[in-house]
Structures are given as C-alpha cells and as structure tokens.
Image (cartoon, rainbow, N blue to C red; front, side, top):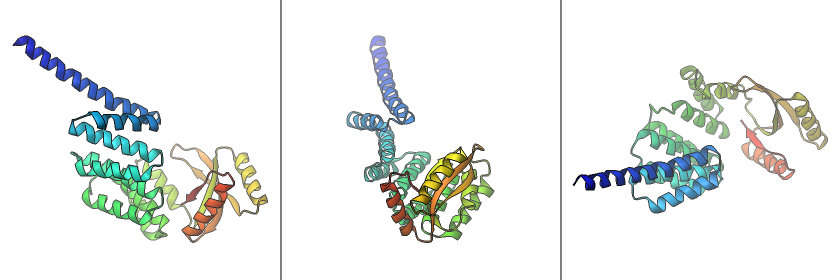
Length: 251
C-alpha cells in the first residue's frame, strides 16, 4: 500500500511539474518577445491539457501572443474565452484589457470604449484601474472627445500619482487638441532636425515636439500635420507609411 501511495504521489508531482514547465515556457517566450513560439506552445498545451485552470491560462497567453503579432481577430476570440471562464477577477481584468487593446489598435475605437466602460463597471476597484483610465483617455482622444479624455487623465494624475501611467497622463494632458502623425523620436536633437528638414523638403508640414519620458529622458519627436479630423490624420499616415516612414498618430 505504501509503495502504491508513493507511486500515486510521485505521479501527481510529475504531472504538476509538467504543467508548470509548460506554462513557464510560454511565459519565457512572451518575455523574450518570441510570440510565434509562445503561440505554438500555448496551442499545443490547449490540445493536450485536460486541466481547466491550465487551459484558461494557456488561452490567455495565446491571446497575448496573437495580439503582439497583430492577429487581432484571433486575439479577441481567445480573450473572450478567458473572460467567460476566468476564475479570478485579476485574470478577467487582464483578459479584458487584452480585448480592449485588440479593438483599439486596429481602430475600432467605439467598440474599445464600450469594452472599457464594461470593464470599469464590472471591476470598479481593479488593481489595473490607472491603466483602465489611461486606455479610456486614449480612446476618447481618438474620438475627439477632448474634455472626457482630460477628465480621465486628471484622475490618473490625482489618484495614482506614483503609477507608471501618471507621467504618460501628464504628457497627454499637454497635447494640443488636434491630430498629428509622428514619424520619429530621437534622443539627439540633430537627428530630429535632419528628419524634419527632409520632410519639409518633400513638402510636408513637419515640426519637433520636445517631451520627457517617465525615466526623465528628453526626446525630440518629429511630427507632421495638425488636423482636426482623425480620418485626415489616417490618410496622411498612410501616405507617409508608403514613403517608408514609421508612423504613429498622436494623441
């Protein structure tokens, strides 16, 4: 009987170690930004595991890796599964934040705002509250709802002054109420000036915005245009991207 008990205990320990190894390998791949590997490992674990908790965790990692690879529809499907099956508020909130990013990044701003409002209603005391506020502010900015955006940015500054989001919120508070396309960000002013002059030579309204990062470093950001309409900014972004510039719409 003792031998049988030891075999059972040892067998359970092996299964536990295998599960730990599988999820830790996925986590390591994500930390190393090897998202294809993370996706493959998570998919493999979903095919072999019968443990519900482990499968939900693997589904979350699958969604996260798909999100980072720009496979937004697949990421949303994975995050929805996690949100439906999550056994903790923390995991639900993480999946909901992933869902929001998978809506916001490809430009589904109204859907992203609805998801943000739902998350805030479901989890008003979330440990990610300052991040939720920041995502709501960014979405309001894209929808040209400047006043609402600044309300959420101010909440971050007032309620979470030591958070990672606070310096970002402060920077966004200083943004003007128009859209611009950023094509470069440099620590060296000379490089920014060179790019700005190049753009001006090509007939673009380019200028430099100085900002301070959360780490206290000064950056010289090269931007083009001052547009009241997001659609105009998206058109300009597409044109600049075709010319080979890395583009990002601000705010």
